[in-house]
Image (tube, rainbow, N blue to C red; front, side, top):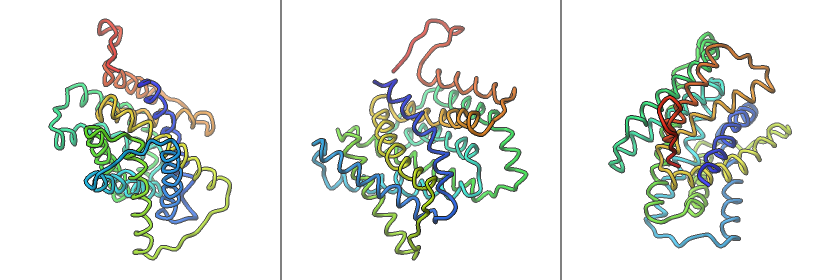
Length: 299
């Protein structure tokens, strides 16, 4: 089951970067993010209620779920979408993969969990590999003069995502299941976005293009409801550090799609980078490679 959750997270979230790209343009970022989580929160709460899986919660639980909604289902994506206006999806994915290291750091701060050397080593190996994979794109973006503010937004969104992961760890320790926590947090996140729309006087607008509408439903139903349920369940099973390494694999999926649909050309740099990512992925999951001795997995 753990392998299924891990693979589902990688495949689902690995395809959302293209969908996010299709959301940018005609509709304001804040509005598009609001549409996504308003739809997702309605569907998520409906599914939890119908299935009878909504757990009893306390006021303290709801206080943390409000924070989780702000970190995981609203502000972080406002940052990602904003960064995506100036940064290519490949570079954005590379930056998001730093969630592995953010989680290791935050786990140490909030839960006193000392990260192993393999966490930092594998995370660094994965990021180096991704940098090699996307080196041509990094050069292209540098020529266009990518502004530091956009890069900062991408890192801020990743840091907020990591904080949301820490709240998920708290829920798990308290016996609060991902379905209940996510359902409430998505509602709070959508409510927070609605409040921002009012405060900033941002008018609601709509893009009738099938590309925009289709990507919106994909991001809401598959990317958010299914993707976050799988990912937060993964945190409950293997911990935030190992679960976050799935983020390092997302750009690999995005690159594969680019190869098929956009004619991406592989190079020595990209092949080497992919090899490093896969090796790092095996290390973080506790899988010993042939030259390291007998194979052993921790999941």
